[in-house]
Amino acid sequence: YEAKKGRNRYVIYTDELDVALAHRREIEMALRETLRNAAGLDCHYQPLVRARDGEVIGLEALARWRHPRLGDVPPVQFIAVAEETGLIGFLGEWVLRTACARVAPIADIFVAVNVSAVQLRDGRFADTVLRVLEETRLAPRRLELEITETAIVNADDVTVCQLKRLRSEGVRISLDDFGTGYSSLTLLKDLDVDKVKIDRSFVQMAPMADDSAAIVRAVSNLAAALGLSVVAEGVETEQQRAFLREAGCDELQGYLFSAGVPEEGIAGVIGGYPAPLPDYSAG
Ligand code: C2E
Ligand code: MG
Ligand code: MG
Ligand code: MG
Image 1 (cartoon, rainbow, N blue to C red):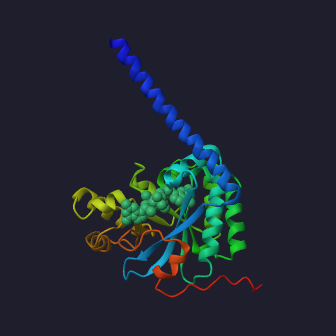
Image 2: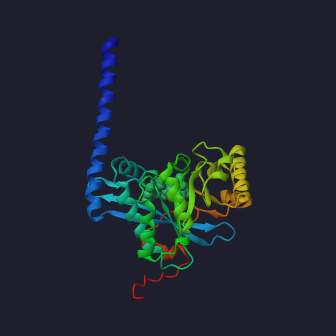
Image 3: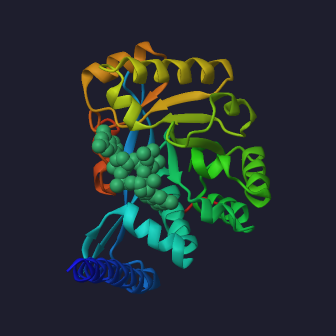
């Protein structure tokens, strides 16, 4: 009886694994097909606001994918598959080019683009970024690359080299999901970054839980002392906003201000004026 029970359990387990694998495989095939013509791929934009006065100063590009059969696939799922299958290079470049082209004509707004650790390990990454900036006529200072804490902490030589090169050209680097990677705070001073984005798990707990509040304060103070800007992500309530401003965060982002919007929604979130269209006539 025991043996049979064990066996059954084993069978159920492999069935579940098979289903998960089949699903991944299905996502991979569909993603390959999508990347051939970018149909179904989209880019949404979530505002970053200045904590002091609530002014929108930047937009973060967030990849979206709708497949005819699979429906809306969440980014965490298709990004993971893209990373495992080597498709992230194409996908990442598509998002970068789309977002830079869209934001370039909007004066005084920067664009933040998420970059995977896998992209950074490709020695051509920095060249690609600089080429896209030229093609879309976006000044390097107006591009911010969001890289997770884990990716930066585990950076290999290729990655370090390219980040240095991009920074020397004026591109800014932002440490995404900070606090989730278990790296030490003292490490911040050795990293080649411009900004720290405190993960939403601390941001959302901060007004209620003393330990999260202490973490947010400590990160803000240290970042300020090191000359880095501090962003809080996942701000959903007025209470959180008030706390974060008082704790010294420079920028805020979250559903309290706006979720990611499709490109037609950008004008609405940056002040209600229609954004000027790209001008390709000059030069
Ligand atoms: P992230 O870069 O940390 O982006 C923030 C995520 O939190 C986004 O989810 C956003 O929609 C969501 N969010 C924003 N404000 C709030 C809030 O107030 N409350 C809550 N609960 N959530 C909020 P999304 O779009 O599903 O993206 C998830 C992750 O997928 C991103 O996390 C990023 O790591 C990755 N990702 C998205 N687009 C790209 C991309 O183009 N390239 C790469 N490499 N990764 C991407
Ligand atoms: Mg991000
Ligand atoms: Mg983040
Ligand atoms: Mg996050």
